[in-house]
Amino acid sequence: MNPTPLTALSPLDGRYAPKLAALRPLLSEFGLMHRRVQVEVEWFIALSDAGFAEFKPLVAASRELLRLLVRDFSEADAQAIKEIERTTNHDVKAVEYWLKARFAGHPELLAAAEFVHFACTSEDINNTSHGLMLQAARRDVLLPALDKVVTRMTTMAHALADLPMLSRTHGQTASPTTLGKEVANVVARLHRARTAIADVKLLAKMNGAVGNYNAHLAAYPQHDWEAFSRRVVEQQLGLTFNPYTIQIEPHDCMAELFDAVTRCNTILIDWSRDVWGYVSLGYFKQKVKKGEVGSSTMPHKVNPIDFENAEGNFGLANALLTHMSQKLPISRFQRDLTDSTVLRNMGVALGYAALALDSLARGLDKLELNAPALAADLDAAWEVLAEPVQTVMRLHGLPNPYDQLKDFTQGKPITRDLMQGFIRGLALPEADKARLLALTPAGYTGKAAELARRIGESGGAGGSSA
Picture 1 (cartoon, rainbow, N blue to C red):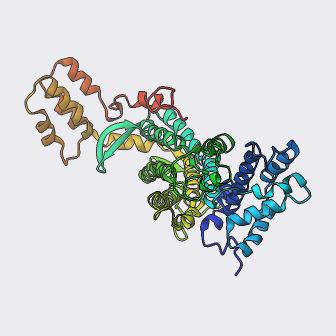
Picture 2 (picture 1 turned 60 degrees about the horizontal axis):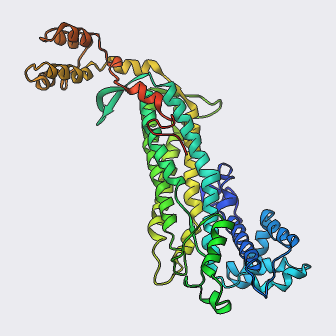
């Protein structure tokens, strides 16, 4: 059976394939081949500029031709490399042979062909390629998708800043907040999580078979290979140079990045579950899409499937990312191959994260506020005013305020009349008594509205997205 969207083993390449179009060219095998070609080309050009008698600086036309191979790299090129790999049974060597074959008809390049992959081990090419893949995926897909969610939630926090909402701690009624403040709490967490993702430096190395420039120095013992490699990694490839490695770059930076993404995903699982709960409580309705079915037997259903899909896919992403962050930094002696097959799943792990962000964004766009439901919940929870009443009693030294309110409210239905009757019987200054009598559950929200309105301001609580 030939693979098709219907026969794909992963839903990322089947059911959800259209949603991941932006990630596919970056983290697929095609993406890996593309970056390998880029690294080989930049190393080759850098060698021509190193001052070696055997390899003179390339003319502008040759440089342009080489960089066009990178810029215009196509699926047909990737397929041609795969055909070579059928013979070599070595994916990096296949890239080298393919690149040399492109030199046909170009005498300057043909004369220097043996400087392709010069003094390199495969991992010099792979680790830099993986760094470039992750850099592009983070910059072009993951952070924009996260920013879309954060922007949408910041707008929600501001719009709903003043809307009172009954809190629930341990699932029970608790001191009121505002709906906007609860959204702002998550936004503040996401600002920190985003910064952690964006700030991870992606390290790379170009130092040979075991990290010591052995072959490099055998050929050119007087050349400063460490400085040369640093220039290629940092100036030509835009990564961060790691001077201390074994055959592989140790992948600690990958683990750091994957852990940062996992922490962000965990925050969004928490939020997805809360929104699911708010929909269940009736605080939000969901926009009805014409023709969409919520249940095969219950016609009334409009299910919060986007938030459920987000939760599930964030969980899948975290399972894979956690394994990768724990496995990749471990290598027997100077290297084993267990990292190689794991690294081929970067796109799967981050694909589930990207899919979850897409689902969450779709779900947020479907929400419609049901303000009467929030108001009704508050009006049925006058027991939450036991906190301010006993606090004011403490202020004025009344006996056993907490215990009095506990005996009065715990496990009992409390109405406006009952609460206000209790307040009227207290020996409090008239001004304080009047203030407590005027208090309602909806009016007892502290600084919630102010905090919600402030989220996203530069220098304000939570800061701004970097």
